Length: 111
Length: 119
Image (cartoon, rainbow over all chains, first blue to last red; front, side):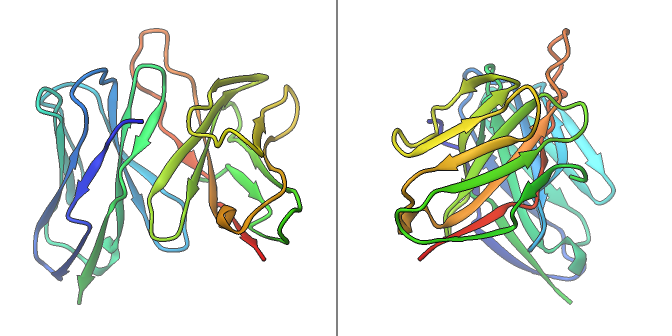
């Protein structure tokens, strides 16, 4: 079982603040890194799939970077809004199509 | 995540009974994953199946748990002789297979989960 770690575990920010959090994963046997957004009482929804070292993805105010050599990915949210409040999960995707999820970063944006 | 159907949404069982959780993947998806979320914990991989095939069951408890994905019909996660520690949310996800070129198109689409409570 692989170790995928996310930090911080939880985060409270004021509306309008920008924030970022980290996903750490093994740097060997890497195939892809997935980010998911999980709102309370809903299902996780895919944000990004990243495969190449140095990848940067962006969707609106949310962006992510990937460093496969050192085994980390950052998720950034610019100008946080209350609707951004959710748990953000990353998942390490190995070559056998296994997925290993981190425990998530719970983000609360205070109006 | 539209299209992945899990039922029931809530399931209550007494200790020793059997629990059957169903997952119908999105149309065209041939890969199914089951995850368990224990209280205050993250998603833990249990099993990965293709039609009529278990690909990886390294996350499944060795006893009482089984999974199948028949040629026709939904994937079933079966828990025999449930115990209180089995109380959790069980999520199913489905995906397309990776492309022949190996590009990761295997985004997972999740169902709404089944919350199992063992009394």
